[in-house]
Length: 249
Image 1 (cartoon, rainbow, N blue to C red):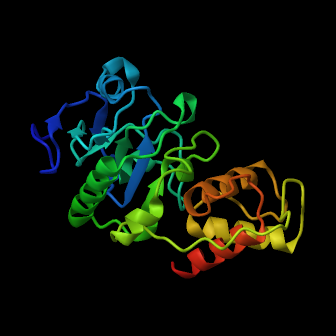
Image 2 (image 1 turned 180 degrees about the horizontal axis):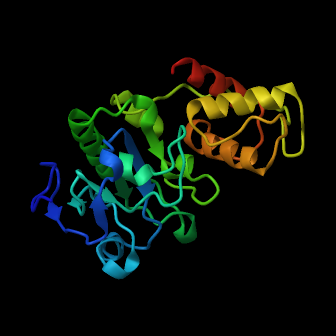
Image 3 (image 1 turned 90 degrees about the vertical axis):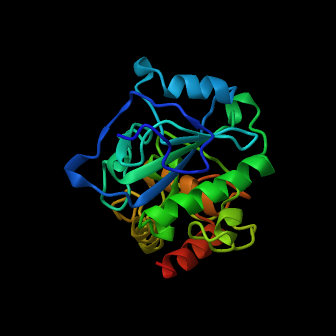
C-alpha cells in the first residue's frame, strides 16, 4: 500500500483501514460512482475512515471540489456491497469507487455543483488514464445494486461526463403518453426488454414475466439514462433508449 495519493488531483491522503487486497488477482475494469447520502462531506470522510464503519471508497469529492483519497487504487475498497454486473458478483475487487458528496433525497437532494463536477471529470479522466475501464463500465451504484441503492440518482449529470469522454451515453428518447410495460405483464416484449437489460449488465434472467427484479433494473436504468421519469415502467421512451444504448456495446 502506498502512503501518498495515486492521483495528483487529491488534496488529502486520509487512509482508511477498511480495505484489503483485490481477490484472485482481479484487475480494475469498473469505475463506480456514488453519492455520500450524508449531511456533510466532513461527516462522510470521518465515517469512511473509521474501522467500525466497515465501509470505504477510494476517493471522496466534496461540494467545493476538494478530493480526498482514502484507499490505494491497487487495493479493494468496501464501497459496492452486495452487487452484480455482467456476471461479476465481487464488484469491490474489480472497481474503483468515488464518493461524490451529496446528501441525497433524505436531506433535500441538491444539485451537484459545477466545482464538484469539474473535479469529478478531471479525476475520472485521471483514473481512466491508468486503468483499462471501458466506457460501458463507468457505472452508478444503483446500476450494480438496484434492489438496495439509488445513488448517485436522477440529478446526476451523466451526459456531462460523456461529453468529457467518460462513460457511455445515448440521448434519451422523448417522453410519451403511453403507459408502457409494468409489473405482472408477460410475453415476448417483456423477454426482449429483459434480454437487453441483461446484455447491458443488469443481473436479470430473461423470463418473459415483468417481475420485481425487472422493475428495479428498469428503475436503475431510468435513473442513469432516462431521468425525466423514473417509475420502473418500460414505456416506449425507455425501450428505445435502452435499444440504442445496447447497440453501442
